[in-house]
Length: 255
View 1: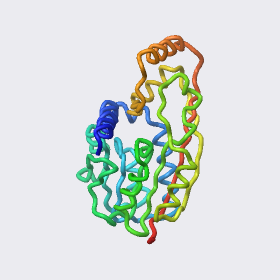
View 2 (view 1 turned 60 degrees about the vertical axis):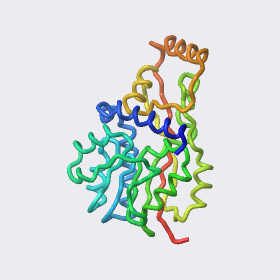
View 3 (view 1 turned 90 degrees about the horizontal axis):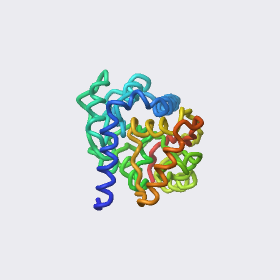
View 4 (view 1 turned 45 degrees about the vertical axis):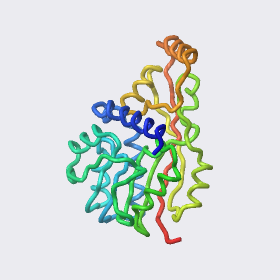
């Protein structure tokens, strides 16, 4: 891992550490999208022996996975130590299986998992090819990889007001999936609108869910302009923010 990648990893980890106590109260969008993914997997298969919840956060969806998909053993894993501690508190079962780890370096044997689930996590990957290859390494042939992530077009209507990260395009995702040893069971995109009282509420949403890391650092002059926009927007009209989400369910095949 390069020094830059390590610094980014630590910054993302700190953001989610700080949000661990507030995440459940603010992550309605993430929970609803993840629950839809759980139900979509349920239409494909249930009764998994070994599975992983990669980017488990506080474990809200881990419980849903176990309940709806009849999972015998699940390993929740997250980059944030404090998120994992929350996950241990929230889980009804499998508390001892919670792990702190990076989705690019998973602590699982190759070909060991029947299901790998990841909700709203992979947009934080700076090398999605390497990340998906690592997830597939851990997956058995015939196993399922199911994930959601924000894609291009997310928050476009507030990009001028905020320092927004770039997101992968659906064209890039489609091209990438064609190169991998997978059978596509589901690939769809949807736009979710979320209402915020004002810009401050939107910023609070990012901070309270840990999604406030930005790779691009602003110059002093840009930061001054940025803060002026925020100050001027206080008391402005409500904001409807758009979140574009890609949902993928893949089955690993021999190639």
